[in-house]
Length: 170
Image (cartoon, rainbow, N blue to C red; front, side, top):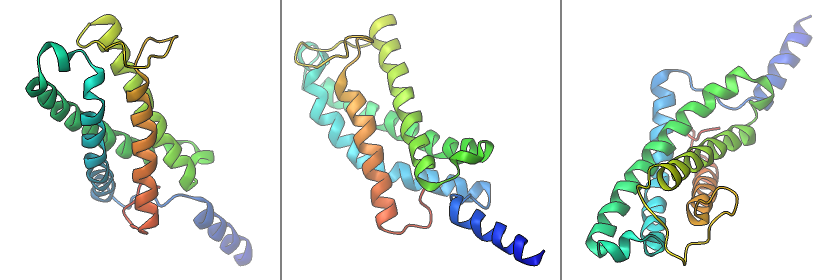
């Protein structure tokens, strides 16, 4: 009987993602992830700023301000996704593997971006794309923000895993 308990415990340790021991630990992991993503989001925002009409309509100063605003918003979204992912994976046992937790982080960020881009461009008209922005034909949202929320989170998670950071998300 002791062997069965030990074997079960060992299997759980091998297949489960490292769960935060406390709220402070979960917050620390989320902050670490957001800090790692921040410079990447900043570079991406500056690189794709010319794909928005704001760059032409309001000039480079307004575009820089918008890029800063969006970068900080991206960091907040990254923080929220990194905080939510371990909680969601706890609820669903099949998602407790490290790579599945990472998948949840990326999926949450991508879903948030799709919602924000669609609401802001199609419904509220808060910003518009220039003709040079490739657009998804179904949703009518820019492909650059979608690519951003695939590439940056995956790169950040890879960096955290490669460094062996004990505060990584999954």
